[in-house]
Image: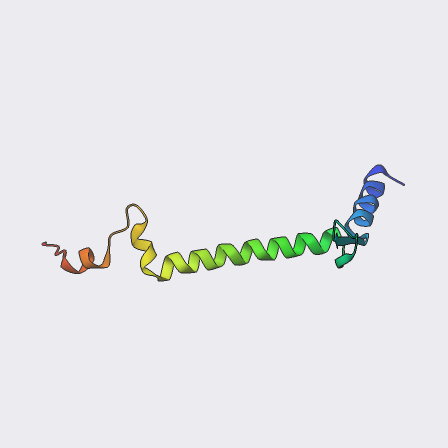
Length: 86
């Protein structure tokens, strides 16, 4: 097999290998929470979360009065009172 193919198979194996995330009580070593994960699931969740946060932030800035705090953006009052003479 070629080196590229072996590398691809190794990466695929690492991405889809199940790992277990366990949260333990430090004093009694009692298992509080456990979750089975693989790297692909973590990557997808982090990517979707980042896209969601960016989208929400953009929406808030674009459609609320917060956009007036952006340097170079004129306020609505200034736009209404400003008259342009030809």
